[in-house]
Image 1 (cartoon, one colour):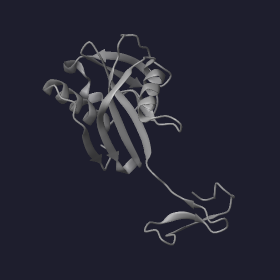
Image 2 (cartoon, one colour; image 1 turned 90 degrees about the horizontal axis):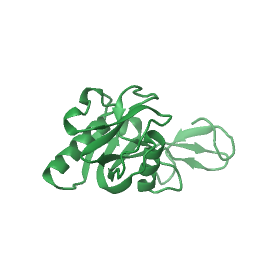
Image 3 (cartoon, rainbow, N blue to C red; image 1 turned 30 degrees about the vertical axis):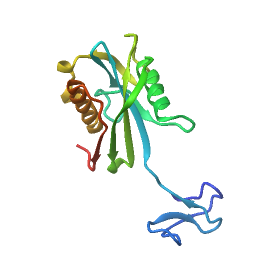
Image 4 (cartoon, rainbow, N blue to C red; image 1 turned 90 degrees about the vertical axis):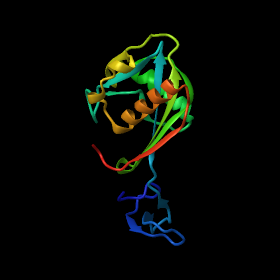
Length: 178
């Protein structure tokens, strides 16, 4: 950041009094601008034992497969964000279930949160951010073409839990891009 979003003055990068980390500080109006991780929220929709995946129509990783997910908006819960992203990317209605995975993506300054989800009716289509949308059984998931490490981690934990008949919570940290 170069300019204060509150008053427009030039910012200084320094450690404010009572803090331990450098921040962008406006010496004119006193506003401290914090840079915090962005929340990416999604789900693993399942219908009749198959998982709904979307092939990305946008960068990053255009042409690669992922679960429906995207940035959370103000004014919505995590579950609402996951359902909205599924409507936007796969034109599908899901029932959001339990928490599945939390992935800290440090290099991107993001936290990815994924839920289990039921796709009650196999009605879906590619939204504007998807090239195509399809249901995959576990054996046919295109592992070599999965868009992000967080998606790979989440899908593998989902399948492990499903095979074990459990619904665990999984956490991991991704420090670098693959």
